[in-house]
Amino acid sequence: MSANTIIKPDKDTKSETKPGNYFVSNYPPFSFWRENEVPMVESMLNSPTAGSAPLGIYYHVPFCRKRCHFCYFRVYTDKNSQDVRRYIDASLHELEAYANSPYIAGRKPKYVYFGGGTPSYLSAQQLTELTDRMKALIPWDEAEEVTFECEPGTLSEKKLEVIKNFGVTRLSLGIENFNDHILETNGRAHRSGEVYRAYEHARNLGFQNINIDLIAGMLEETDENWEKCIERVLELSPDCITIYQMEVPFNTTIFKTMKEQGKLTAPVADWPTKRKWVTQAYEALEKAGYTVTSAYTAVKDPENTKFIYRDRLWAGADMVALGVASFGHLGGIHYQNQTHFDQYCQTQEEKKSAVRRALLTTEDERFVREFILQWKLGRVRPAYFSEKFCVDVTERFSEILTDWKDAGDLYEESGDLLLKRDALLRIDSMLHRFFLPEHQDAKYV
Ligand code: SF4
Image (cartoon, rainbow, N blue to C red; front, side):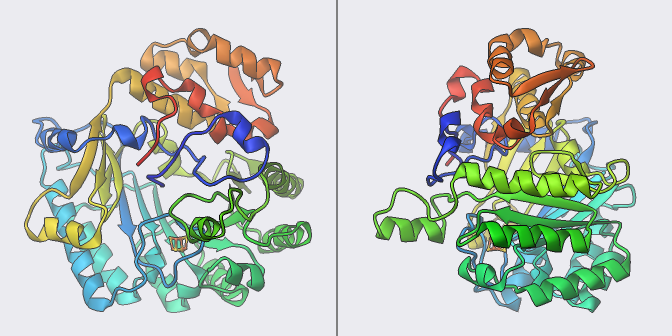
């Protein structure tokens, strides 16, 4: 997730796409995480009792074949096999330290997530070695879900077989668009032919859950092309479809070009158009039997197609972060690793902590965090928050909820609070109102 988010007021998503992030990925904002709180992570890991929250592992692969013009992640396109070897060794050293800590020792992950960058950039051999060595340190035999993000052009049948064999249950394909011109214009490395080949191999291998990622509003997207994208998705019929609305954060190539040209508005569709496209996609998917399960996802079979990583994380689970710039959460402490490749590897070579900044959250901040994140599911259960945090959310946030009801964004059903579709699709721009006063208008840096 981005570390460069600026939370903007609701009105900002009523018109053009301006530079900056709208997506709320965590709370409190990253600008409140501090280097001087890093020792808290060590203290937590050395606490005498093991943690009791469900445990997850996030493994970051920072390599990509090419940098997409809209990308704001820490990725490298110039690393050779020696660099990859160095990185794998460093990350395994990091995992070993976690596995031996009193807080983690003896616990087994309920979910594992390989994100990036491009996890499928690694070769079949590198992946086999990496995952064998990870499992030897912390076995995954109790994991309910293992997710693996892929760029279609990096997948061969053999590599997919390896990925299936080391236990991946949720294969996530970063397709983004089916049109070769749009893929090229946006700097993607893959083309549609690779998408179809990879998808067919993955289906033949019988992955339990295949997700397709799309982006509404890429450079040069049109009504006609978006309709075709929806048709292609329906033909492929994946288990899950994730649709993001295009943003133009400050550290993207698109923003740099805008700056050079002196433009204030991003050269992509405006927010109402992007929401119209997502609405169109969701309506077509619902017609085909899918269920919309969050602001970003629709699934074919909601009973059997879960997204455990998201649901556990948004309910306060522990997550060990491995790799450069990774984000983790342990025992109420947020943390992020070193954000540069050499620095990160060096910490492990010198047997030091890789953590760069951290934040020990208060009980109230943890409550607000879960409350904010769960809105993205479109349904919030007040009973969950009164049981877990002893907070009556309808009382505490009565003013905001009344405003939302008056605006036609919110309704109630069996004691739950539900968002109308239009509000769900702009939820990231509405959440800042729940932030504690000290976090309002915060910059994430
Ligand atoms: S594949 Fe993903 S992580 Fe890699 S450059 Fe493109 S957007 Fe960034």
